[in-house]
Image (cartoon, rainbow, N blue to C red; front, side, top):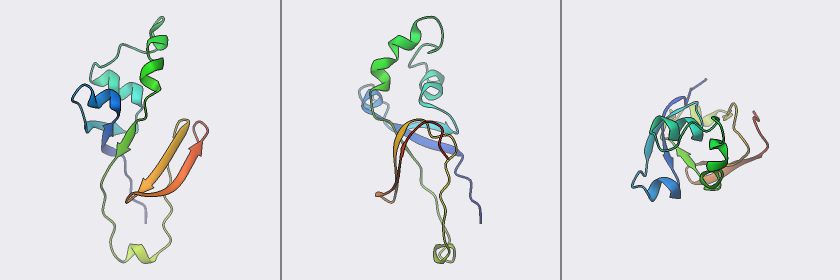
Length: 108
């Protein structure tokens, strides 16, 4: 069984909460830059010296979250959770349980 989790997710961070933007609706696949740019919260990060302005924003921890359902019969099978293109450091949780960490760019 394959189940795509692409589509609508929620993004949270202290940066967003300070702007009363908790649970910002975003699209995955994507990136923090593309999500913040879509909502006009940042300038184009790769134009001129704008990337330097992003350093403080990128120091924040960002959380992508999504709810999804699995059939009871599928829970009896081996389940592999595959992410494509996680960039840098992450902690992956399912139902508040840590299931994986990443420590490198663009890992599968």
